[in-house]
Amino acid sequence: MVDKHVFGKILVANRGEIAVRVMRSAQELGIKAVAIYEETDKDAFHIMRADEAVCIGPGPRKDYLNIDKIITAAQQTGAQAIHPGYGFLAENPDFPEACTNAGLVFIGPPPEVIRDLGSKVIARKIVQATGLQVIPATEVLPQGAAGEAAALAFTADCGYPVMIKAVSGGGGRGIRQINDESSLLNGLKRSRAEALMSFGDDSIYLEKCMPRPRHVEVQILADSYGNVVHLGTRNCSIQRRHQKLIEIAPSGLDPALSREICEAAVRAARAANYLSAGTVEFLVDHSGKYYFLEVNTRLQVEHTVTEVLTGIDIVREQLLIAMGAPISFSQEQVHERGYAIELRINAEDPKNDFLASPGVVEVYRSSAGPGVRLDGAIYQGYKIPPFYDSLIVKLTVYGFTWQEAVDRMARALNGFLIIGVKSTIPYFQQIVKEPDFIRMKLDTGYIDDHPQLLDYREQEREVDKLARLIAEINAHERNPHTQ
Image: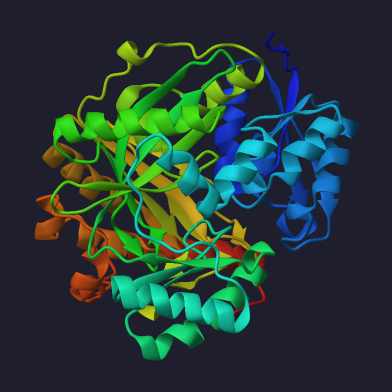
């Protein structure tokens, strides 16, 4: 029998745009949303969007990851459930266990599913049992000389390049490409240290590196009644240092291949006894052969392209599933029409190795118009703190054709005006007019193949000059003694 719950209030255990995103779907269902924040984040936008907010500590960063403090905040405010958003807590099996022990519902997969799929080695074994092809890899490498010997034996058999991966890795962390034997042993040591620092687990393994694949993922939803559906594919091949920059839906693969990959993703989810929203990721070579990569047991940053393309609110479904309801639609009702593109506008300076650019947002004018969706967390006058992720707004556009989507993205990027901090907008403006992007000729080597994308010149338009003058006047009015 499925346990059913009615949520009157949930706590969102995250910050920034994803906290706002979750709150909006909850509030549409008549559920009140509780925000948490650190003292160093007291001016954050997600606090303003919540029905109530609780300061959980001085920060920075450590209190947002403190499970005990979050559980206490939920209990004190009378929340019945906790949504983790995305990030480390969403992938930590200790968090749903703590929620259950405290009598709270965790809005996501059960801890055993997160634990199994969070280990890339265990996840590979689960999906292999369904007939899915996986990339050749080692088992978990033992420590010391035995691990080095196993790594050398693997490379002798399959050749270079290889990838060193953290068993508990995620978000592009804990990954290193090794191209020759001279860098292998040092790479093993560095990867172990990075994995331990990032995930508290220094377990690593080796995987054969596929040359220039397309990175394709499938959004899935699963409920407590045995229903598993997919919401189509996404192409997230445009990456920098294994971090996704742009996501596209659908993936642009041959329709028959897309259907096959989506069906494989559903089989993998069933084999893992999956529940809630998740993403099954694949690498596709240029012959059309595909390999299982991993399962992300949470909401993804790029879920918005799928929502725009299908019209399905993934967060709403998460909430309903957590309350014991079945998925509100059938597989036959899922339709992909047109194209959607999402990119992450960060407070970073692309010309300075994408270094974070915290500071005061003196002027902020967002884009708008047909087919444009914004998921943001800044406002004019907001001081972006240096302690957190640099994502300031996600821009998602829809077009009936691929060319319309590209044209709309270019127009939407031109509609932004952000003064006071650097942003990645000029870099993306280069990409959307680059011929390979326009032809949708995309693989994981795209960024390395196009270094000229950084050759833009930041020209100050007349409207920019006017906005800067207004910002200077406003600053002077706040402090008339400054010159």
